[in-house]
Structure formats: structure tokens, C-alpha cells
Image (cartoon, helix red, strand yellow):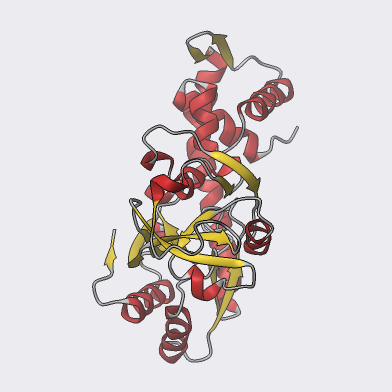
Length: 302
């Protein structure tokens, strides 16, 4: 009998969080979907792993044994996958760089140019991820480093360096009544429909809906998209508006969309991220240094 590692990860989250609600938020999945996965695991193992009650989920004795052993097993498996994939890219002298949106904006070509100068014969392979993968494949070991909007889910388990900060603007359809304004207070956008990332991205989605900066006002969702092209189309077609980094006005300029500065909402930060296990990897270390040098001299590792 084979058990998917995905089911084991779901089990560990429920065991550690104690409730399906908190575990679902941590995993960026819906609660019904998580419930089905736990039942599937119990069926495959032929044992009951949790006692369910109104107050939460308590592990049974078989569940306790599984909860004690599985985290180390998963950590070993993740490391094996990372080393295997990393070895393949090193053999080909390729550094895999994941990114979302426009990566590090204008700094990206400078980063790549400096890296190839430092590492002659090496090639940077840029891999764009959808917003449903806020770590751009880094958490799964599919890339060696990633250029991302900070913070992102799972960031605490990785290493990051802030490259630059920029204001958040709003993207509006051209015919929107506020499109002619020079600066738009965020509170004037509270009742507007927003184009959002998929629900499974959890608090990363909430960050770009600025849910903590609405004084408790609920968000209206006009459309859900997972890719920049779909996001732009939804805005241009009038399904909603969206917050975006200031640089989106340059990198995602297109007919039908107007970008305007927004007051009353916090800035966005762009950074580079990598696995702590790669701190000693000279190739990854070189790329991180290139990022810091190309972006701004105040970049800091966290």
C-alpha cells in the first residue's frame, strides 16, 4: 500500500493545529477538501487517526504514533527531492529561479547579467509560477531560488532577503469613475469588487485584498484569477479592480487599464528567497549577492 506524501502533510497539519479550520488555513485548502483527505488517509491505513468533537480534532493512539514519526520522514523526503533536483541542475550548470509576476522588475536583467559574469558557463532558467504557488516552487524544491513578493506563505521556513520596497497602486478599468483621480484614498475602494487570487492562497490573497486595512469592511470579490494575463483581462473587462505594486503600471501596462497611486494602504516588498539548507551552496550564495547588489545596497538577509 502506497500513501501519498500530500496526505501525510495534511495529517500533520491537522495534528499540530488541533482543528480543521486552522489546518485548512495553514495549507491553503478548503475545510471540506481537507476533511476528505483525512478520511482518505484513514481508509488507506485502516485506522482512525482523530477523535472529532465540537472543540477540535484530537489524535487517537495510532494517530499519536503517526504524528511522532511522520514529520521527520517528510523532512527527509523533502531533502532527498531537493538534493536530487538540485544535483541535476548543477550537472547542467543551470540555476532554476522561480518568480511571480514581474520578478524583481528592472533589477532582474542586472541580476542575471552579474550572475553570469560571476559564473561563466552557467545559465539562469526563469520559471514563472501562478499565484496559487506563492513560493514559486521553492517550497517544493522545484527551483533553487525565487524572486517573490514578501511576505508569502511558508516564508518562516526559508531564508529571505528584502531587495526593495514600493508603494501599492490600484489597477482600474479605463472607464472607472476614479480613473481620473491623481491619488485615490483606499477607503474609497472598500466597496468596489476586487479581482482576487484563488482562495487556497490564504493570507497571501488577503494581503493583496488588504483585508487588515479595511476597518472590518468585508471584501467584494468580482473575479478570481491565477495568472497575470487572466488578472489583466478581468480588470479590463470591468469585473473588478486590484491592488498591485507600483511597477505593475510599467510591466503590465495594457489598453483598457489605468493604474493610480493609493493612499492609506501599506507598501509592497520584493525579495529573494532560498532554502536554509542552501546557505552553504556557493552558486545560490552568488545569486543572492547579485540580487542584493543589483537591487539596492540596503538589501538585508533575514
